[in-house]
Length: 188
Image (tube, one colour):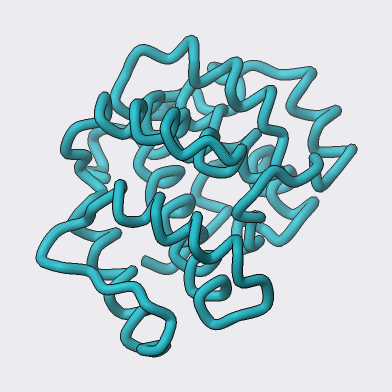
């Protein structure tokens, strides 16, 4: 999937442009809010206003907060989003916290998510380009294996392992954000 920030409306595109236009490599462990302006703009709006036709506006809003490493804000929204999508964002947020046990709890609540097949393909392609990084995708996406991989990658800053984890995390964010922010009728 080629990520296109314009697909989510002018305002979301402008907000994403404040730090990488949806291509930012988010830290594997707690980062600081990467854009004060994004924080201010997100604080003054609602999920329904930003994502009026989205499959899951609240989940997309949680993902937008997470993109900018505003973990507390993302957590507040995902905690109040009783869907598999909300649980998915909640799991990513706790993985970045880092709190792998809590992350695994939320991923168990996700179950099998519609983006898993595409995420598995994307992760396999990324991993194939860096065979020494130590991550293999079997036939299906395993969020628990990725939690473990991120834990290992955090202990190897600057390594191919860390670079691969960051790339897969970006693909995960883009796919899940697209799924949540797109209208349900688009198929995903």
